[in-house]
Length: 250
Image (cartoon, rainbow, N blue to C red):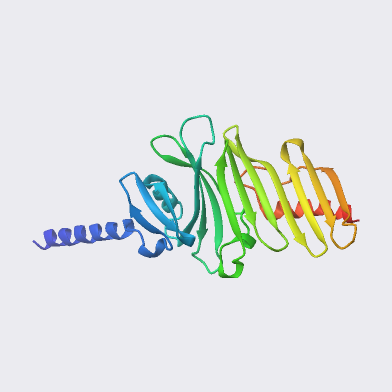
């Protein structure tokens, strides 16, 4: 009898442990109001009370990717990355688990029955463009347009406005075009990286002179760390372009 009782208690303990490991933490996902529309679609309310309808399976995939973390969904956009009839998705997620937040861009392919994570980048959106109390002047846009992922980052400061364009090649997401614009004390600077041509154009407008002199230069250039979406670091690319800019000033 004692043996049977011991087995019974062991089974109860095992079941309770299993429930504990499979139950999601209620505080893992904040700043997201979810209203179920159907088994297939949910409506979420994100920052600035923007309401978005997204597939339930996509939301589940995002939550699984950041399991156990405190996150906020900032943007979700849909469009076709290839020639099929299915709409793929791209999302910007802010991880608020630690005191210093980070923002990721996730790209999902739609294969009719589910979404699969195609690419995840944590270094395209740098801290200058985070939505935080310290950076309330920043904003960002992301969309899928004609099989291109277009990311626009806006902010005052040294990085200025940054625009990135990615396309799918050989089943991999790569940089197609990169440009920046910033207006600082004494100058307006535009940089354009034509990836396919291995060429950079830099235009500097000197606003300190009455004539508003404009200097334009072109340089052969290949980003040393590669152009794959998963590897791209906007700040590093910005610095390499800055080294070309110094040649104009000198």
